[in-house]
Image (cartoon, rainbow, N blue to C red; front, side):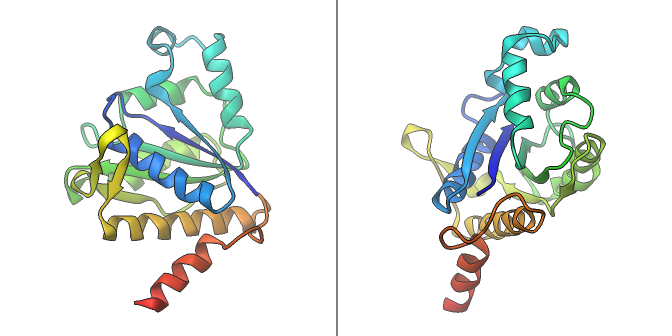
Length: 199
């Protein structure tokens, strides 16, 4: 099965974006994928602000990313774009850091007016970093992500359905490019189709 890394670019310690990422990774893990959550806010801020690539924390983060078959790139919308924190991290990555990878953009925001951030802000930088295939992104409203006790996230049913559909397309793209077989356990594509026929 493919290895998947999710990069979350929110600076907040109570981030809805990070909570949505954890929710997505739980779904992927339940379907047999190996997953890692790389929260950029946990990296040393001095390294990010100074643009210091040659530090242990940045080496480890870059190496984790390099080993992934697929990447979920997640950010809240700040000033009609992805966060400055995520920008600082992406600027430190090697050229073509996403080469050979399938990438799912995941964006959270307060209104649907922020939806265009996926295609007009985030997708171009992912392409510039050499992503092999950027699948259709997913936008989630902040109001649809409820933080529970202990930091866990509960998604509104419709938001959960839309996110699962996006994850199905993402894992299907991974399987088609040879990033692992979808035969181990019930695939997300099958799960979504089954849920749809049951309604």
